[in-house]
View 1 (cartoon, rainbow, N blue to C red):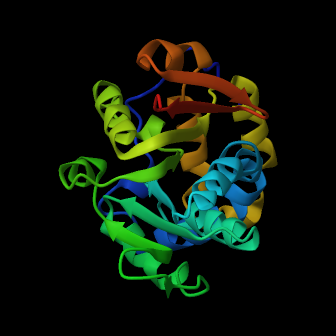
View 2: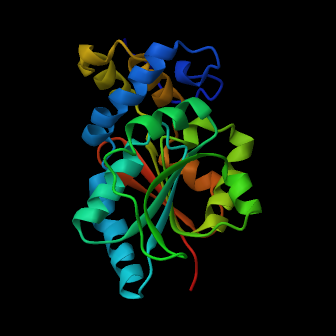
Length: 247
């Protein structure tokens, strides 16, 4: 059970990323993320401290708050964020993107139904949308948003591609928030011992353990990110890598 995670094991691959992943387990994984991320991802705290004030300022300027959720998976974080903003009376246009068409198909079928889509005018729309695309393609389109977010994405990316990915995120959004796990032997043990049995029909249990082995220490993220980015811890066992463009 005890695993010393002093060294990052970047070569490991999560089961849900496999092209031949069992469809039933994969769909159950997307469904389970809804509850799991509400419990552990801490996005509600991130929203209250960093996102809501920014969104209110954009709305005061008479604009719709535009967000891109990169690597959105089953769309749960984008869905949460859209509804938190709606509850706070903030008009938002949120697009979840993922390069895996299986994730986008599932998100479109299961996460967009309860989100209101409305047209403010021909140039401004509010709603929750999903698209199978990449940050590279969006940058080529000169796509711009107020905020780029991603959840548990950094540790999936090959090391040599992380900096180009961050550069693309910064090109898309005036602010970027990357929320990921912090590698920790204690977190690994607690996850292994306390993980609810009800989730073991999906990939989350094994993939969660793999993700902890692939994730970063705070110093590692600080060393690989370029100027303008900052890293801070988020209790428990999480790291935020954030960027804000100079005005």
